[in-house]
Image: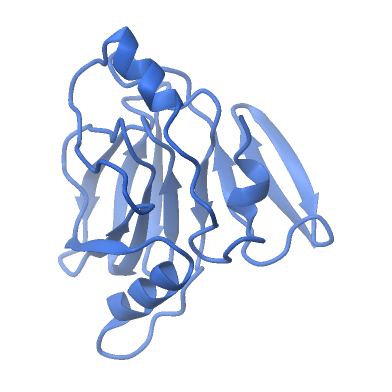
Length: 189
């Protein structure tokens, strides 16, 4: 089986013997006006990564993320305005419903994607994101690597803040597959 990973306009095929566990789409974004995005690390989009079942599907995400070193911090939605986290990486686990979101800031640099229950998106520090619309039952679990500042920003970073964003510590593991997951292989400086 081959999985397609997107790097800007370039698509890269990865075979099963090169990748174990979930197979994410990898998206890269250039800086976009005041949104820095991350020049070194791709956004990872895992489709249908967590089975949705039972009365508390968010609990499945929380268990999976926590067991892989990404402690869950909240259950809610995605803000309906462009923003980013300059001092942490973020995981969004979509537990219920569906939505259209923009990653990377406004088009044409940013990209609109549809997310559904069971999907997971990993955002490197600095990556813009915004909800366009969502179903009434839309529910997201948010998680971050331990000991990182989860503050959001809606304005350009100073040169010093931008350099600090580029130095945000790498997570020790992939949020879905642990230390042998795709994030560990795909996120390199």
